[in-house]
Length: 181
Image 1: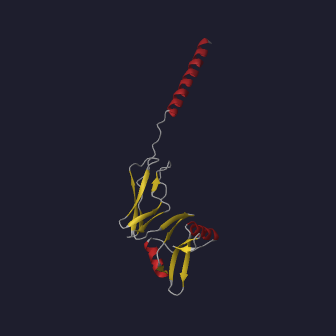
Image 2: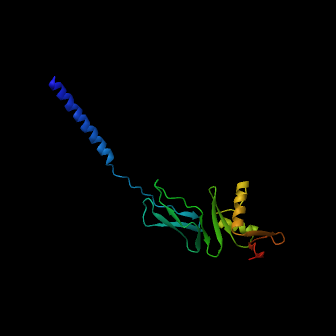
């Protein structure tokens, strides 16, 4: 009888040791290092591209956005390596020709809107937008209309269309002084 109790005690002791051994191996797992892949370049045909310069590719690392020669970045200037192992998306960023002094870039419901201040005919404006890999805005719903209206209000802008010369002009309007800048 003593040998049976001793055998059971030894077996229980071995099981206890095995359970402790298995648990200790789980607790001392080496943490996984998350690394993002090389960031992709965003291109617009032969016109421009956005390249990303990074020093590191681990979680929290920052990539700085740059444009091709002759173009300047408008909008967000960086992306971040996320815990999921991917770079944050390049949003609200576009390369614009250096001759554009005032541009504003916004994201709305997955689309990027670039407000450009340049006097052009409708045809010229359409071609200019295409050269920047975009299109003239087409308002599709009330929310989009409200978004565009709010940006115009925020930037204190009014649009003027003269049917005589078919030119679309964008002016800065100061409500306090009632003057067009």
